[in-house]
Image 1: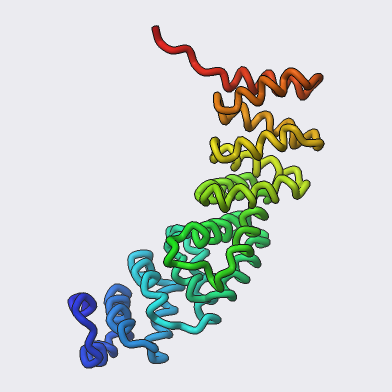
Image 2: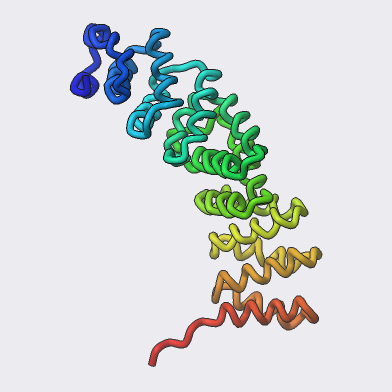
Length: 275
């Protein structure tokens, strides 16, 4: 059966092995499904076995089947059921779930938005991870429904999550976006006024040291006190490229903010060259 899955697809061959999809051997059933996937749609018996493998199968059988999701042409509402089960599987990384959510389309995005409000922080983190994975997918893999905005808002929501591990997860995924996409998103997050979102947005901004400097300088010169302190702290993390602005800012600030600027300057001090 594995050999057939590697050969050019022939409907006759698929029909001959189709009865084996009912095998209690999960690996054999998965191999048969790989053959049948060349000739969609799947018959009801094969679809039932597919869902059994998705929900109850071992990792070694579900992983290959995830790659076939787009080719299987399953209805979106059925893919959402599969997606919900797969999100609970601890051993499957978010990037491997991309085909399922791309196949589910708009319904898949709605599922992620729902799970981003789940009571379990682990599930919220999984939703953020899949959303980030869909945003950072190759250009030939557009996000479900072509809607990047909803997925971007999912990451911003993650920046303000009550659980720190979810917030850090969101920062990691934002940092994988291009600067052109991430900086407007983070500017919007800083402007939200939510203290947690603001703080973690600055954590993400320092991942784009060169591109983020003008934005950080603008926030450091702004009117909102907490954002100014956080922007100054972030400029200190950016390093020597931010020193000219920090030196200039130190000359026209006072009090706690000036102390923050001086701390940032000390942090950005270039290390002495070895003699």
